[in-house]
Length: 84
Figure 1 (cartoon, rainbow, N blue to C red):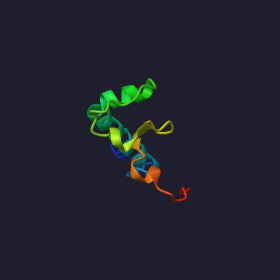
Figure 2: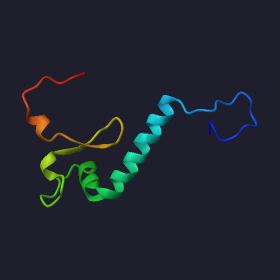
Figure 3: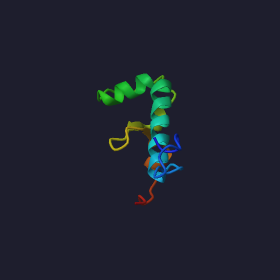
């Protein structure tokens, strides 16, 4: 891991952008799995979210690319062009 040892003079001292982004996604995914365990399990098995869920109205989904729980909410129903 970068930045942990000074024994290797070729070792970089700082994390790169991609390493920081990967770590950030892993932390968010971990917290989401703790906070929304049932919702994520339901989405992964193609079941619906229970009406009593605090995020039900936001139309949650699991992003296939990064595995993060995301919501559509009001913007999903808005008549605006999707930004790419």
